[in-house]
Length: 330
Image (tube, rainbow, N blue to C red; front, side, top):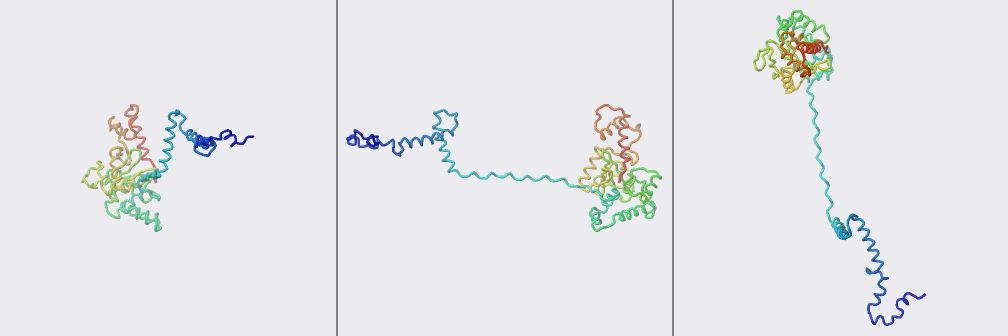
């Protein structure tokens, strides 16, 4: 076997005289230089890998340009500043819960305790509970004062004052009311109890009965802030001494916020049906025109889907009002 150098230089004795660069030309393909076939193959392989990362949809004429852009982009990114942390979205303020403005008694006879708080304040009520006052004894003591007032021990005409309100009652009902003040365990059991409450504490009382119905109690000698003396004009909603009660789930609660009270009373006067009397919500059917009954019906039930006769409207109105008057409260 002929050695490699023998094969390369055989019969080439004068080669270096003819070409000074002959040695590099002959050995060039096997030398580790940038022009060697080994180095070239490595560079071409790396180049192909980089080209494969480009979009295959590029045609051959665009590949060289895309490769230059890729390399340029890589060098630019290395010099770029790190991205700043995105601004955090400020926390939204949580929705405020509506304030609870109603007083709900925690003891039996919700009507009495609403009237007690209206005249002594809720803080007095809560303080009595905190110090361990016997609330039953406290209630009986207050009721005894009411009983004594209307049975003549305070003033000679106190009993007759029960007839001096916007609700007309008979002598029989008057005696029944006075007797119930001491014999009935709960004033709330009868809507008639609102009459002595209104008279004794000398304060107008509105009662939201639910289902767009309400009652109004006021002494005949009560003078509102606007100096009105009309018993039926409901002109007491703007007075600081007006009391607003709600009937809900068989018991009373009371509004403690002045602005809410005024707003709700104004709404009731506009959109609710006011009972004509604590014992009689409606007059006889003959006292109403069809248009008047339609107005009452719309307040209580909304506009009728079908045309109703006068009799049908009267019966449906009377059924709802009678149920409200018959409800047993505690």
